[in-house]
Image 1 (cartoon, helix red, strand yellow):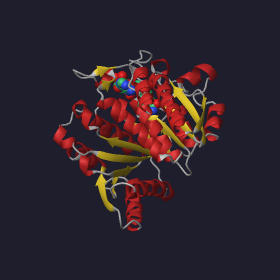
Image 2 (cartoon, helix red, strand yellow):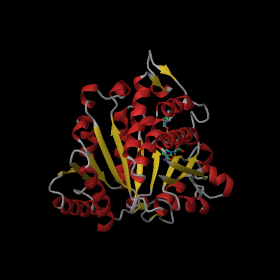
Image 3 (cartoon, helix red, strand yellow):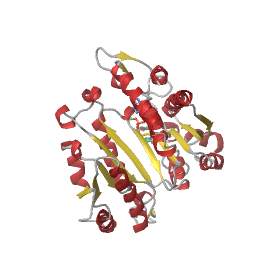
Image 4 (tube, protein in one colour):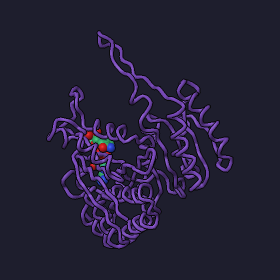
Length: 353
Ligand code: NAD
């Protein structure tokens, strides 16, 4: 297969970990006889420094003509002034909007070897394997906002259309059919009108999927059950802000931010793949960042954008093998483990493939 892959490392450890994910994709291409063409571009703080904008037109154009986008992370103290009109994260928001990526998938699968890395008790975690599907381009993060003239009152607006709700719910139900056929739709329908529309729409869609078990859960209750009975969830689907918060909570089930990948999908097969962690300025450039979340994101790229399931599974198996051989980056290191750096871990996984 020929595929064009845009590589957007961004800032901080985004650069360190994206290079390792690319290395792993090159190993996949070599082993399975594919041709992947990689083209890099600037986004986030790096793009602000070079061009004054977080998402240069050329970067968006490159992504639009690529089959998939491998993304690192954006942001850092250098660009952290909230009063500045241009900010690194606008680069990512602009990409999601510009590419029409409305569904963000975050799988949380507990590797039994890393059970000690989580703060949750092993017996509660056992069997955890869930995916949160978060709506990505609507809701309060994109609604009208402002302050009154005296600056003493502020507002943000949450808006959803049935079209926006339906398309992300459909992603969740279709995904559930490939998994354990269970969907939990999360809202705040006891308070918010947007959530009441969400709930009505979800109930109607559930009727179209009689083979999928379905439940509604209030977001506060979901936050509690996620750490009380995480293994009982299969696919969780929710709106943008609730998803933002719940996915960070769910990430802690797996122990480290450095392990969790994500996929952002829209219509068609083009997607953006990124680790869920940020640019980690505290460890940037030190060569110690865990590249596995970025590498596992490249597995999702193979699965969802290129439809290469065998290759995706090979990447995931190689990560499992590196961990089984005792290799750990310092965020996951415990006594007796073989501590390695970012590129050593990338070399290991690529070598196994
Ligand atoms: P962060 O995820 O960058 O870091 C949180 C903590 O986890 C830090 O101690 C960091 O060292 C550690 N960590 C994260 N990824 C790791 C990895 N791969 N290996 C080892 N340790 C890892 O979150 P933050 O500190 O809240 O944010 C830092 C910057 O990243 C901010 O500018 C923020 O806006 C940005 N950010 C960007 C994204 C994105 O690009 N999608 C997401 C979240 C935060």
